[in-house]
Image (cartoon, rainbow, N blue to C red; front, side):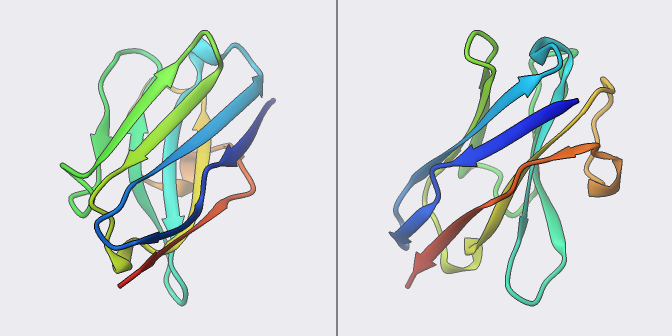
Length: 124
């Protein structure tokens, strides 16, 4: 079992920045792959970024590439999502999720564990 708790959401103006945190507990964090997803009002949940536990690589959705950066601190069992140059279309509830495979998953159905989500609102 893995428990995930997100924090760091809020209201920011377009062009601003936020850093989301995802604190994990339970299973050995070093063998847990983490993904970030988001759900905008009236839309399906979509992939944002992921970091498989097996290597230091990160993968991003095209819509956030170059603006968002995922990092993890295994000593703190925490994953971060630094979001820069935010746009109104980034407004959504952001979720972190986890799975135990070393594969790269962009399909949310393959993630076993989910946090409760944190709201990010970007005003124009």
